[in-house]
Length: 212
Image 1: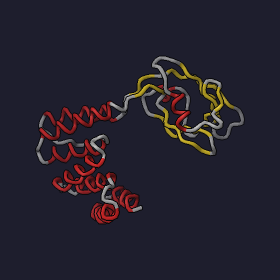
Image 2: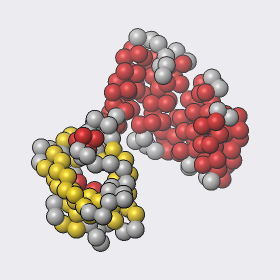
Image 3: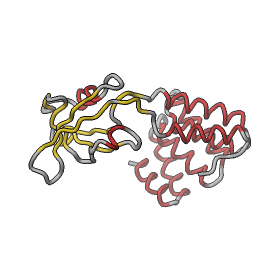
């Protein structure tokens, strides 16, 4: 609850209020990695880079350096302190972690609604983005197999597969009475953060801080 409130403050640029709320959240739950990361972000926006580094380090340690967003944020804060060696090291780690998130699939995010899988979002530049699939499409079947009774994990497993293979989804669009089949070819999906993280690394190697 505190972290959700702080997220709202961050979006509004009310960083001091976000810090106050996040410190309360951490007091209640000392192992709250996301709260530490958001606290680091608030300090960063106020140009308190030492405090930002301390908070992001806590977030990284709590997640065993397996969450790329806080690692990249730590790198950015180090760069602002002109500690480019550390910035480069952390940014390389962020790239390594996000690289481990590559997968073969369609590039579609799926959630469950009323017991059926629904397209929750589509990653740009993926097979799904040019397939005709759209947000809120209900996936009624995968390769002719009904999704009724399937768990979310089962559906996601069926969407993944060998690179270059085809999969046919039977989907129903909002406001439509009939379903349609959409065939998509699976492809290796690179997380969208990879391109930006690589650019950041080159900036740090040039001994410059990252600017959006």
